[in-house]
Length: 112
Image 1 (cartoon, rainbow, N blue to C red):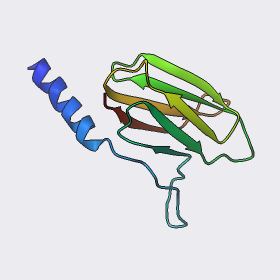
Image 2 (tube, helix red, strand yellow):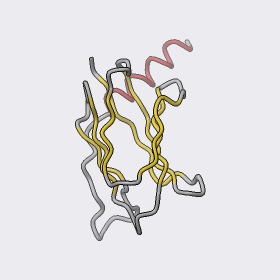
Image 3 (spheres, helix red, strand yellow):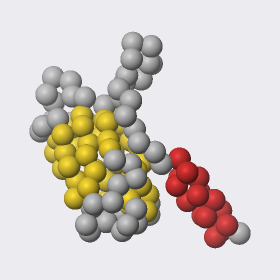
């Protein structure tokens, strides 16, 4: 039963992974800080940050099991992550402010 439940979650995550190319409009209630592409990715993925006041943020990527596989400070407005060491699967990223508050979190897919 646990395996079935885990497979359902993974299938849901797989189907739900798609390109996130939306920056907020004036009608949006929440702001989007990150644009990323391509999704699914094979060898690299780009993250573009909609930064306020050039504040430094922390950017982290976790595998589906929750292990941190990448971390960087976002001094610029764009990061390109090399995926050669990443295995096929779903990954979750988080963008955190200086106080450790999560500003945005989403998922992307690596296909190899």
